[in-house]
Image (cartoon, rainbow over all chains, first blue to last red; front, side, top):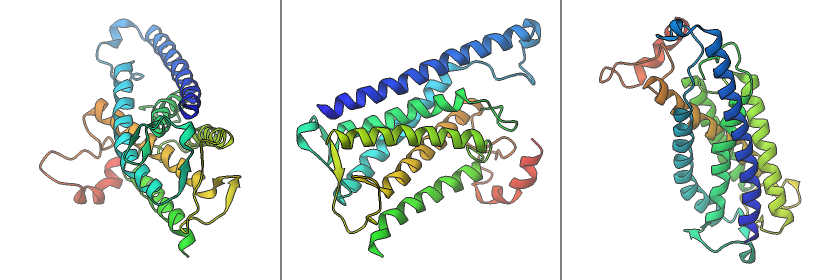
Length: 130
Length: 135
């Protein structure tokens, strides 16, 4: 169970960063809505990106699912190749093939943390649309 | 030479991520500094995770012929650093690709859209330069 607990710690950190990113994003959109007059906002031409949290969440979920499929395949290959080993007393014993279920926490954290860090960093001149 | 099989496979995969990024204008190509900071943050985060796991005795390095034997830290092979970098790059490519698909309806960058059924990729590569400029 040690592995599961360790994962929970790092997942909590990733979730905290994502929460901050979501709050910052909401605030930024609020400010840009105030700056643009409501009438001018109708067609959204040449304006800052509209707040679309559901699309961000959907992209995170899709990325996570794709990463899970890849992990199920390649984690198994990597364990079969003997690249690393796990102590049985620290893992839950739930496995997908050879891959401990706990390993999937890495890709969950990646899918949650990295897009959040990306959105927290100021957009460059050429990347306003992301 | 066998000691570099895994590292070679990782570098090959990483090259695939860079090609995807460049052709589809996803991540490092559109914002090098911002992307580098995301990759750095990811690398630090996952190395800390790995080192904690190693310190707690959860996982350890296997004895295998296909790794170089160079270590970043006890039980942490050089290859793991490249694996984590690859994982972060892959994650961001996927996220930005899915975001674009949800936002614009296409996986291709603006100005590079191909009409459905007209062309499948190849011809699109040739005209990419000029079209992309007219965004």
